[in-house]
Picture (cartoon, rainbow, N blue to C red):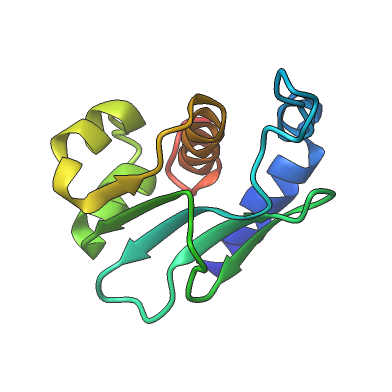
Length: 131
């Protein structure tokens, strides 16, 4: 799993369109992307969640307890493997909609869109996912 997470981080760091979105300003001229933990994926059987963090300059993927993540999704190992390792990937939005009680998100279109983009990239990067 750590190998896949490094691949995910490398892919996100190399995506110029994603980096542009992360550095976008809001209408008032301030950064639209929050600094800190944007996404936390917690698998119930795992000690530490997968956390995507933005420092304002670099995006990182880590295994640790999140600090006030913008979006948090808790799932069991079977659901995680189905979403990210099965090769039979349902759209992330459909899976989130089917699991609403376990998805916590703040209301902000820009950061929410980024969190979804991260999960789509994870689906595409994970072994067994689409290429």
